[in-house]
Amino acid sequence: MGIVGNCSYLAYIDTGADVKWMCLPRFDSPSLFGSLLDEENGGHFYVRPADEDYTVRQSYVTNSNVLCTEFTCSDGRFLVKDCAPRMRIYDRQFRPLMLVRKIELLEGTPAIIVCCQPRGDYGKVIPESVMASNHIRYLNLEQQVRLTTDVPLTYVQKEKSFILDQDRYLVLTYGEPLEAPLKETAEEFIRKTVEDWQSWIKSSYLPDIYQEEIIRSALVLKLHQYEDTGGIIASGTTSLPEFHDSTRNWDYRYCWFRDAHYTLRAFNQIGHFEELEKYFDFIYNILHSATDSLQPLYSIAGEQKLFEMTLDLPGYLGNKPVRVGNKAYIQSQHDVYGQVLVSLLPLYSDKRLIFLRKSSYRRIVPWLLAQIERTLEMPDSGLWEFRNAEQVHTYTLLFHWAGAKAAYKIAAIFGDQGLMRKALRLAEDADRLISRAYDPLRKLYTQAIGTVNLDASTLSMITMDYLDHKGERARDHIAALEKELLSDKGLFYRYKHYDDFGFPESTFLVCAFWYVDALACVGRVDDAMRNLDQLLTFSNHLGIFSEDATIDGSQWGNFPQTYSHVGLINAACRISRKLDKADFL
Image 1 (cartoon, rainbow, N blue to C red):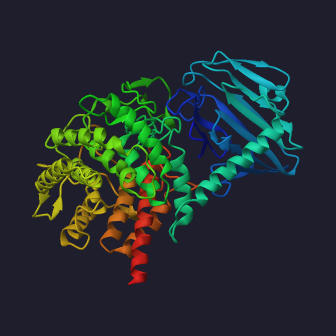
Image 2 (image 1 turned 90 degrees about the horizontal axis):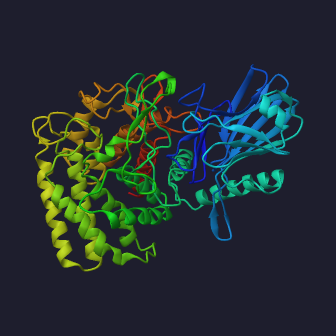
Image 3 (image 1 turned 180 degrees about the horizontal axis):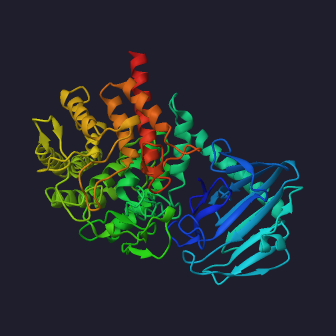
């Protein structure tokens, strides 16, 4: 599938030009089109040849999130161009709940079929459709849904084939309908949306290598920030399994502090900070109402209770359960405090940013430091969100250390001596605790204090500069993880031990990118590039990555996974810096 979006919603479109997944009015709303999880009842919105014998090619308009699906059949060729409008109007970002679809005739007179079957509440509600002169209204949904088109409405209603002898337009709206000329508006919206995305990319910093992959990753990541509040979701899908029949099917349409930290770091790498400024508004509102702790995740509106329940749906490739909500919101994941501090550090320290609310540190930093102090030695569920076990995770301790370091830097900017002393003490305390996770016989750091299990997340000890890149300990640690967790073609397991649901079978893509990043850190640049080149083959035809992968090339897990694209950007940028330094020397 490809995705289009405008930072208000996402639409997933397969190579049959079918909208397989589209939730409105928010990322975490029930699906309006949901055949991804329920082929029969979930709802479809497709444009395809009437002739079943056809070939298809899918691509994006260069440096944009406008998707093109080109069909070639016996009687001609045509293109479906999908656009979620995004542009600046009157000095404001315009991002309506609207999908614009242009059917562009390229050659011949192909016969095509247009089908539009929206559904409410994950397929439970079948709306009544009412035809007007040039649109179809779909009633009994939460908001007015309207398809405005110059395709004969009877053909759409009856899903009857017709000859495409000119360009046609379909505009689906949720809420406010299109009250403007169809063709002119659609063309203008497509053109201005392409220009908006291309302008955003043009202002990006890119290294000399892996530019196409970084551009696509950046465009994917941008789509996952809900611009209204600044919240950043982990993925736009739910219940796509980690591997077949795994039951590891989760709803990722929420804002994890951890995922947001990595996403913002990737944006910073390519010179974009407006996302961080919007994220500050999101996190500041959450901190304002926080009492004695933070949840690991919130909704895009900062809502706390994300009750997890199962839906009676067939699921992706028959994989059940289908879950909405995420029970991880009740877990303790103490790395969140350090992640927020590290994420916000550039707002206070980067001289390029004119951040007018710098005095906010007086409320934010002491409170977050107090939480690090309170939870320093407390076990938690960890970043992999184990449901039936808590440990003092090395990864959590690492972010206690990194968060305290970030707090020290912020305090030093304002000359806050008391805060500096507290931050320094906590960083030293975290450092001492991390040393207890070191196994001198195996020359590695374990997943948690008191366990023998290994964990790919400890690669972050190298990429976050906890371990000296030139030291033996960093190289030994990588070598030990390679022996146990490295798979073929550069793929990397999170861990291999038994967890809440059995033994993991698929590899976690971000771990493979962490591995590449760590290799570059310690000077194994050739190994890093070789592994990265192998990993790039695990994307789909559009350069988009899911969460998990298996050696046979199958993608699994929620899609796209922001973690994976963040890992790609950070690893590629690290390799580039190492190469630049080598050239300079």
